[in-house]
Image 1: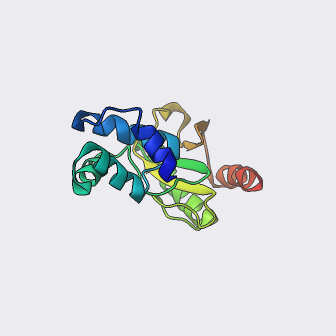
Image 2: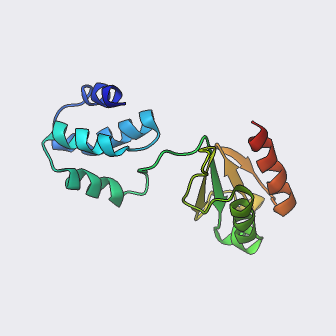
Length: 151
């Protein structure tokens, strides 16, 4: 991984203004920002690790843990919430034995609670790997999870 980070860095100018694009590229390539990437970026740009981490942790787009093989987003916007979104989230947590914001122990699933996916007419909605599952209920969500577990 160390070599891959250095390869990414070499395609950017060693200027402070490159910090956000660098963080975005590392995450795009590796799926997250491992601790060593923070150190490497800081060294390359000549800034402190605290500055790099502080900026990265400010923005919700950056994550510091490896995401699961499948990313599950449970919508809890108003339409989804009033149509049972909270119950779907609880079902997913129970079925996968994971809390929102975490990844399962086997690294297969990451679960995120999101404010709105913009699919209100299909509420409640769950998205798995960019595939939208609308008009969900507990039975349907269990069935969909089973498909991904067999994967």
